[in-house]
Length: 101
View 1 (cartoon, helix red, strand yellow):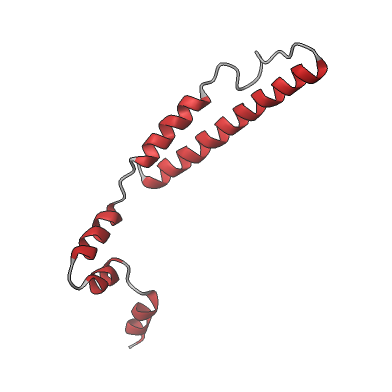
View 2: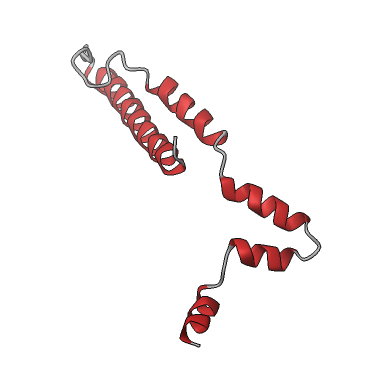
């Protein structure tokens, strides 16, 4: 899975879990305040395991491999790490100056 898809998946899972937890908390307050049974069986969050989905997305995010990190690690181990890092992250202004010359 691409990195941006992993991040997007985590954001959606977090939003869904937050929505489900917020709805559950709200339902609890309504039941306590109004002393009524609040039927949550028809809610979009009923029986949905948002916590599990969020935990899975977090695990996927935490094990995400970014190829650029390998390049940075190699560059930092070099004697001339500044030059190596400039190759990984070229300076736009320098590139534009070279193009104009």
